Length: 206
Image (cartoon, rainbow, N blue to C red; front, top):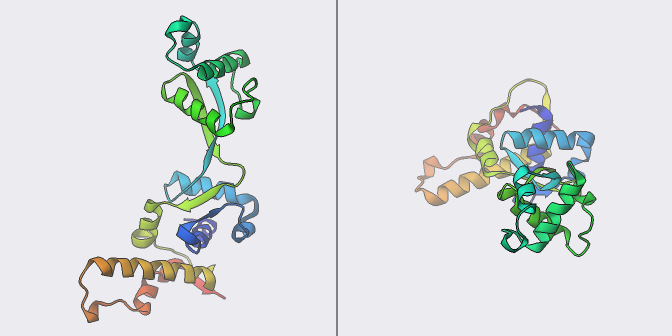
């Protein structure tokens, strides 16, 4: 994990339920790298984020449906209208370019597109939500931080605040583990023991 990615994840660890808006001030230091970092971490299953439809087009199956007898259509009138709009476009459309459906709200439109895509009548692509996008650490990401992550290198990587986020996370993990297992007094982990598990995070800076 690159240092910027590590810092991003550790900042998320300090958020409620390990999730936050990408636009939150805690990520200001990443500037234009936020989207790149989110995609890289998401590709590895460590985090996830809200998505939106970026473009869509009608498929051959969708075109065939439009040729069917109107009394035998396997779709609703509003779905039929959406397929007509896509057919007239002749190629890919971004959702905001869909015309002639003023009475259909954005959420309903996206639901219709998803339904048509599941039936193979339209093809769509999705990407990171552009406005008010939430990002969070996945369960796989939490397990990775808890059980698999090891840092390396000698250069300064994290601040005391970020180290504190990781310590709190590890303490919660230990407490949760203790609640499900019988632990004797001499088995009880100490702060020093927890620190040992994160020693490889890198040299701490103030």
